Image 1 (cartoon, protein in one colour):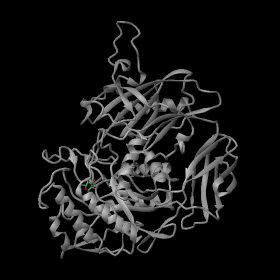
Image 2 (image 1 turned 180 degrees about the vertical axis):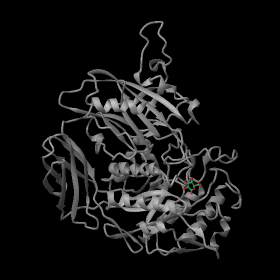
Image 3 (image 1 turned 180 degrees about the horizontal axis):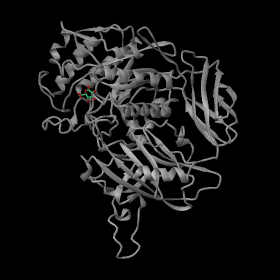
Image 4 (image 1 turned 30 degrees about the vertical axis):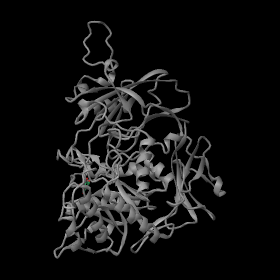
Length: 596
Ligand code: GCB
């Protein structure tokens, strides 16, 4: 049915961009929040539809009863409302564990201007979204954590308009992530929705970064969208006293290279951002951008050519104090501030792309980031649709965040079991990322194995494709007791920097006992003390990421005494109290800061 709708739509509105399948190229307006936008956040009507009745009954038409006898078995205007952005699970008790379809409807008023073009942009909808404007299908998007947009110039009406979104967070074997994952499957329109008003030809995309390994040259491109493809472009960084002119080609693209003599480079101690101004003949956009290089040399990670140690932490995108997903920039800032209290300079945004505000805040706050896609555990390795889906999520994430100085690592997955099919899949992802962006490092959270004689060996063939070899390691929690951690040694078969992407154990905040009692703060504290002794024996150790900064909800954590639906491995409780292990990590990071 939807395909049929889509075909009709393509025929009648040829100029409309449709992102309708998972292999589509990421194509959305760069830095959309800086453009002329109408914010469509607010209260949206919703109808819970576990049997997908709304598809056959065409809820997208948003029909109203025309006579008192007419039978219409839905009514958006009488339906309750949810806050957008926001997950549905935390806003209606009925939806806490819900996995299925929810229809959203929102009315808005707009007076489109002649000669302008209009784009409807979603920050993220988990997991599959079918979008309609004024009863017409725009297309669908798959993937719960990245932006997508539709051009709606020809569909907008002067006056009242309505959007309908069919959102479905059902888990599927072939999806990314797959059926099994250790976090809450928050559904719905979880990020901002905006309508952007653009000129007929506008600056759609740009990349402005230091050239890989070259502190004196900025390179990048400008991509226009519209008929007037050939334009003069001017890129200026007034504070650095540089500018460059370029001309876009018949495809609306201009590549450029700009020499810079004197720049204050972005670091975590001094996260300098410059105002960058891009002018074309028909558009202007400005953005604050930081400039830094990131490379590896042997076992070192070099930021602006200097060795660094990544004082990291893992983080889920979840609100500790208010249930559910963070809904505003303020919520997200608090999470990063908690990481800074631990004296972090690095955050692993696990296990999926987080809100775009995260990387903007990290740019401002001087936190380096690891960004990841939900290629998590054992996904459908032989399925080509799954591979295209994973590639598309990477493309969308990289398109969105490629100008963020804070982002230094793209992670292609977490704890994927080694076998031939997975190897082929993951190597394809590593190649995909290297081709899209050579100015950052590629990694993945790998699995090490016990090679006998208490030796933890990391020899995953995928490591050869990665710039940093990272692995998760849970000695003292899933394997052995904390007091036994000391018997282990490592064998790591690469001349590359090593980052421990996860380690740790659980504790119920406020539960105190001796250090042998599981789930006590003392047990967790010893896990950390002994883990730090162990992992600092790794010759190439260049970063650590405890799992995890804050307790988070997971339907897999079912112990009713200690867990109650929460993964308790946080260094903070969900109410923001620091556990004893927090101070072990903080002391370690204070010492590492003196060394690097
Ligand atoms: C892991 C996973 C992470 C889990 C964690 C745990 O290895 O990468 O997603 O939440 O372990 O707590 O078991």
